[in-house]
Image 1 (cartoon, rainbow, N blue to C red):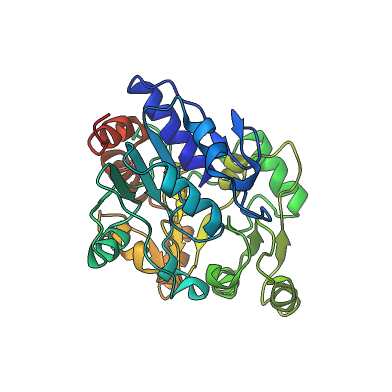
Image 2 (image 1 turned 135 degrees about the horizontal axis):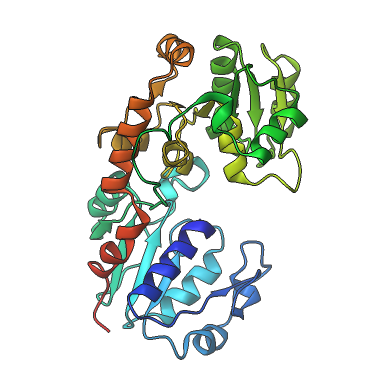
Length: 336
């Protein structure tokens, strides 16, 4: 979410806004501790009013969407009454089992609601809230010959070093799941896909939400070699994508699932789970591999077809390019 917020901030800058950030903690311009997810109590209205006093437009990133800090959401909603604001919804309460009975986000005639998928837009409409979908956006490299999968020859030095650190040879298969470990990320599905491909399984993120014991159990009984975490400070996320042969996103639920598009922009094949928004994204024309389609992916890895990767890249450029984000945002901004 922080990455997408930064992209919005940059796009608003392109549109001529001078921007500043307000949050409960972190490298932001204004800190209001009560806004933090784990704050013992919410902020006061005067604190929020002072933080937003000079703003002509406020973009609220998920605070009033997922009820992780309801006290802060209530105060921010009250302060923004009758003021131009965009509520950018990455998640909605009923999309998480523990919040299923929580009410819909607040609404106001001066606000615009933006969702990151059509499913959420429709669900808000069912609850009387009009929203517009603005999909997450990505830096999409040029489409062209000579830039495809290419095996180990297409890897950066850090990517090759990452494979060395992980103990994966240049001709061995490596499946990267660039997610955290929690129930809806379906680590078991990623492990099964890697095993069917005869690959090493690489899970990038840590266990969260009490998933530690289950992750230990899965790793102990894994049907394939497993490596966990980043291989070192010199290796970035781009290097991780370029180090792997396949990206896995086997999730049962994602609000968007950025690895789906990041696999495309890094020219890697994707094995994807059955979460609803995955079907929505695939409908744009992406050629991805389902968890029940590992045989086709196995054959593709034996004889890679860079045409598949380039076609996926063309779809991403047409519909999800960061270059078009300022225009997509401009179309939904409220009057100031």
